[in-house]
Length: 335
Ligand code: TXA
Ligand code: MG
Image 1 (cartoon, rainbow, N blue to C red):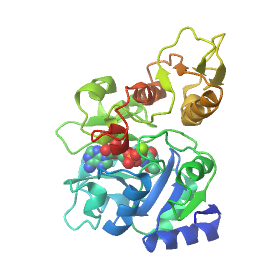
Image 2 (cartoon, rainbow, N blue to C red; image 1 turned 30 degrees about the vertical axis):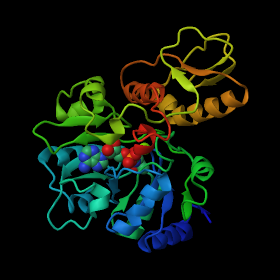
Image 3 (cartoon, helix red, strand yellow; image 1 turned 135 degrees about the horizontal axis):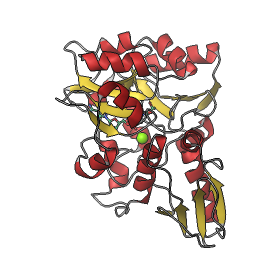
């Protein structure tokens, strides 16, 4: 049975106790809801892969209550300190070399010599991590390959019975996942655009290549694989016109003629659009299928700031799907 706990101090203490027992707890962060397990326990982390139905053991992000706690497990570079100072707590994940003596289990890192670390900004998430006092591994709390959850209800709908508790802290303020930057190589690499924009990172890191380059050439982060965040309906990008058998994901002034419309931001605000993206895809997919619509048509979004992260998620939602059930069923291998 899945318990829903409204995030108050008692609930946070109960959720922390469950995590310490090796149970699965979904919790809200500023980005998306995470499916948390004790990162130091292979058994606990194995539950994550089972609950998400993810047959491949992809490396997970370890979450901490402070940079100090995070840097106890990795070898931080000067740049890592500067990024932490500027963006933590917040939607940034850093990949750094593992410190010898780190207690994070192999299953959480997929046996890699690096660890993905993040200090989230959500008040509830921080209080939970503080109460656990240990790193918490957490991918997004959705079945593999599906749209990420940006509120507790999304988690309940998709993960009911597969998670021990959901700590409900309301909707996520950022609404899409953290930016992932790899600092373990000679030069910093952006592995996944996200809640911290490229422009923001460049104020600290200097120039970083456009993430568009990475999406096609460097699929070194499993979350970068093409077909991901896939709704059931096919997605068409850069729609300039729309048909009545299509559901429109609008941005700014809407287009006439769609069978169904969800506007990410009528005023063209990228922050608002990011926060509403997954809820919008979910709504158009569910309601669109009920009405027999064929496609989700997505209007263009500006290619700067959070627009890059939104486009990245839309591009994956629009990627051709692998054949379900086959050995190379990509959707079920990622997430
Ligand atoms: O906002 C977020 O980051 C959310 C919340 C819950 O914190 N978490 C999340 O986790 O999106 P997940 O597992 O869906 O994405 C983790 C990403 C994946 O693309 C994974 O491949 C990459 O981080 N990653 C983790 N460890 C890595 C490593 N050692 N080297 C390279 N990539 C790594
Ligand atoms: Mg995910």
